[in-house]
Image (cartoon, rainbow, N blue to C red; front, side, top):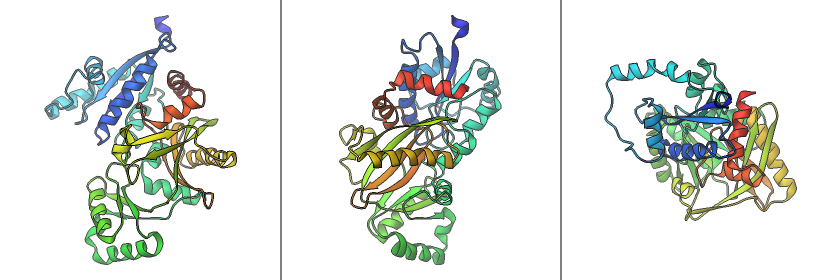
Length: 353
């Protein structure tokens, strides 16, 4: 029976400000893959990438996963780093299917997916193109626009533009005419609401741009939509299915990092209390958005909905959504009849097709 089991390379951690969230996601996935439902089918080989980019062995990775080790370590020498990367192909020989539980840059943006592709082993989630487009909010919204998908007005700028006073004046003018206040300022390539601010004035906008520029070279500014925040899960490759639609409610002014990961600050309603036609439109749009950017395997698609106008706005596609105990993606699928242990098994099955 042992030789028939698939060895799952569960990769987590990574060089990203979402490092800790990744560990929480990986723990939930590890537990689901170790569930009696999956025990006879999979062997989980956890692989931790530390904050400096070093790949650790399975035993050390397990100790990180279960909180036995400190996350801070001295930086290794360049020689050790090179040796560590040389050992990577050997590690890949022990894996049948890669399961990335990474979030943010270097894990969700197509970088690790390209590396997985070189090993010629299947992996869970989107490929390099879908991952990179899903990670970069500017590129993603440009694709949405070309497919005539409904979204909020936005503008973008580069970090280098901040030194150009004439260009920045045109940015502020566009804000006044197209977007107005309040508005959101976001790094183009981050998740979990890290580096995002909400500005109610020009000065807060300037401060928000400076904060976003600390995280990314590319910055996007979006119009604030007063409406309900809705989310829908997508599963599959050639044939995609959409989950029930869920709603996020939060105590904070907007859906911040703290409210995303603090059960006292936010709550979810699954399924959301929606007109059936609106729910179906959101499910259809979720699949269309994934197909537009070539995302597949799994994704969580976020929306804004204005009840007064019945207008649906597509916000973004998350190609590697969280799997923590407060994460929407696994909760959406559980409400759709797919418990976590069955969900992870389905994701692996999809990857191997």
